[in-house]
Length: 492
Image 1 (tube, rainbow, N blue to C red):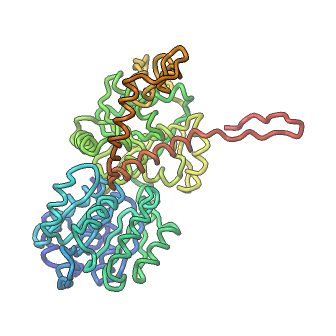
Image 2 (cartoon, rainbow, N blue to C red; image 1 turned 60 degrees about the vertical axis):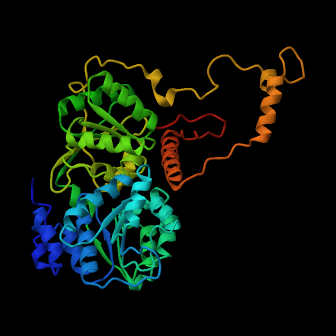
Image 3 (cartoon, helix red, strand yellow; image 1 turned 90 degrees about the vertical axis):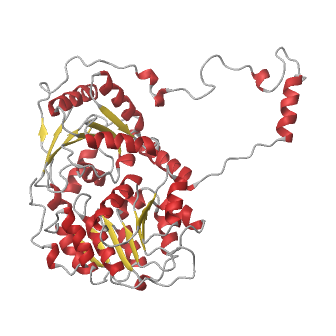
């Protein structure tokens, strides 16, 4: 691995608490990354930081080191409430929350600080018991955090540090109202250390920082300086019919190296997973409706090399931190130019190199204009694809895909309207005895709706985001019309 991603600043040159320094030495860290070299001197002095940096640049270690240093050098605040926590780290996705928690363990090993985690989809009681036992630092996603907070599992009135990671993703996933809810229940911004990190410091992120932070110092690591030298970008221009054979050829050429394939819609992701399985590729599918336990199992298999291809939608893949990814393939070009940078950032992490391949097909070709304008350079296009096309791929049975299944009641013969109304066929109007008894029981025993939890809301939100992304990417443009009613052909 190259060290070109490191700065000339050593951790030993910074005024970091000795117990945190021991954790840094245990991990074998000597030199800071650029974002660490810029953010740590500010945060260690107790000043708020608003930082711009991509994932994989060391920002997690930056804010955890600053957080632990602050807690060890400051007396615990008094609180009259039950179980106050001292620091809160909020992340937009479960996978990112888990990664921060795992990264924090070795850094906190010699400090005596207690870390805990809270995220939706699994281990509800287990997480609750762990938090109730008393924590210093709580890491988690907004939905589960608010759930426990409203139940009084922990208190925020004595909070000393708040960290928002990937703030732009918080907006994209619709968490911003939840974030504001928590921020308004903490001590005043001047009484705590506030750190916010985002891949892009957009106007909405800057407004959040202005409203809930105390004169933060802005530190920026531009995306161009992160990816340009270490990611090889290239593109192909296949027809829609050639996309899958071309992808299979690219993956065959990559052999057993790790590859993340990005898709715009869940239906296409399922379809592609079936094609890969039919042609003996080891792949896993990650979409918004995959249960949390299964998500963790799939990611572990990918990290350990049991499968070397991960097919994922943008909603499911946000915040993923997976080392040693060699290839990123944009099977579908993203409709949002910023997502292109997030996608290719899955490779070339921590100083490594990688390759990002984009398929500019008939459906999404127009997206390349916005992408190249955003990244401020053209992506080289390879015109020849004949040698790469996978020969005679085996076509899978796509009728069994979940997204192709008909809803209940849609298959078979249409129901008789008279039967549906509880009437006898043939025109009789008197309900049967069984229908009458069933009706009486429904009156006597009304159904109690199941409670809707924060986890249910979060899962529904993820599914709705994937649905919206699919609708946005497949929407046709309204054709223009001439003066005499003649339709002008669609372009692109």
